Length: 354
Image (cartoon, rainbow, N blue to C red; front, side, top):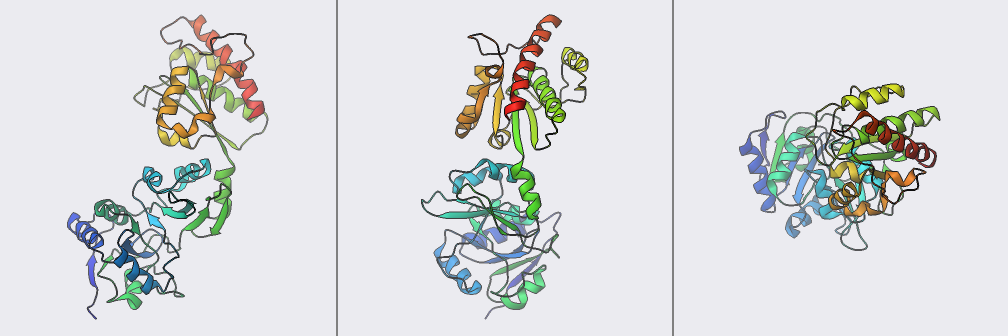
């Protein structure tokens, strides 16, 4: 039996040649011990039957029992999972990259798949460079403790894998928390580095996203007003976000918006504009837009949220066939006041039904 080759790799500044070597071994059906932030794992190419057979033999695991995948980008979850619930996007936004494994419905009908984005530079770079789907169960024999350093992994696995990356002890030393959302209900399958209470706190919180064009007036007003209404009624379980469809982030709210909101007892002087992202949209329980053009943009970015997108003016008690709330940018202070009054009427109703 040939001893496993060991590479000492700097966890902060890994050399590209070391990353490429590990990635090449994975592409050629080899097995690699590598670090994550939780424990050391055995990486293998999920699409290579020979590699997976070797991995099952080492782990003494039945062939039909699947391993979770590691991914290097949140958006890649949609390459493997289907019917992804809002709760999954909320958890990804909070805990990825990190010690959370999500079990979701697979794109292969009738099956499930576990996915995780590790918070470890070496692991992420190896996965990206390999360009193959990588599974990475803990680097221990069945029944043994999951290893927190490379030496512990090699006690049982030396000679059984092709390469071991040694970057020192792992940051957490405890396995990931596994959350099963495959049937749209939440099940904590394994409580690991993230506590059950932390998971529940995130999934029970509702997210409201307001969308306008520049994120400097209308959506800022709506966000400030809703947060104030929710505070009045003691609601702490709602996250409120605002964004624009056509803006470079980092600008302040317009002066007219700041002054009008001050009259409402709301300080938005510290607001900075941000551009809408698909991640924001997908984790929102409801998306409230100012104009039909915003609705179209949101649905184009994330078609699956179509039934969660509404024009904000629909909630105002105003008899008007035009459901757009016009942009007051560049108009008079009176126009700004009219916009605020319309938004305020809608928000009073939204706060009661959210």
